[in-house]
Length: 267
Image (cartoon, rainbow, N blue to C red; front, side):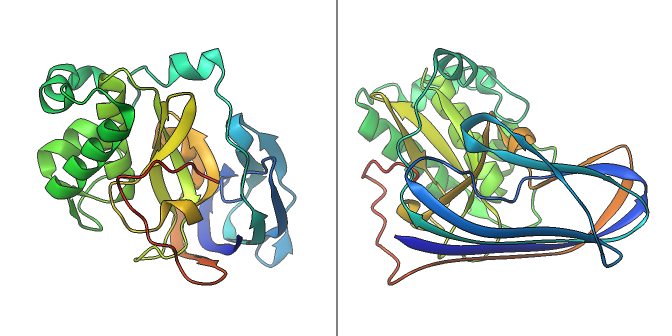
């Protein structure tokens, strides 16, 4: 499988700051990545330090003064990543409530809705289908600080909101779960995409309740407890304005059909 992805961000810096970008494909065994990444400030190149995080996450960090910043990334990804191994730490931390996936608020609710599903394959399909059938995908309907409880009450959101709700339900059912930022061929509207991953029967499996893109084509960018760990841009101490974000993701050949009842791993 060959996938081509890109991201272009235009940002006005209104006060000097430190920026962190997570837009580069996670480099993992099994895939070959040919890429280019550049940052320019008022037309001048900016050198970024690369920080390697968990599960291949790559953070590009630098200080920048007032002016206009452009980030540009292009990558061709060939092959499929090998299954991501889970450490004992992973299986502990991804069971805990987190900032946007407050699993401790859902113990009773999740037990009532999903407690009868004992096998993992059925549980994942039921949670994904439940969230999809009760949520409306409405851009602009949620705030960046909304968590899973807010999402459940509002009944609307975008991909990050769907992912947080799925992760909260899974953790409440004692299934380790996390959020992954991905490039998503076939996604409409095209943008950075967020999905959930659940650890079942010794393997991480993708859960995407939005159904916006085939799970088998997704390309991992960043992995964490929730979107606090996977945001494509973090601003520390300064003042910025995000003018535009352009994202593309295509797969060679036809998009595959995605059956929600099948177990799929991110590769």
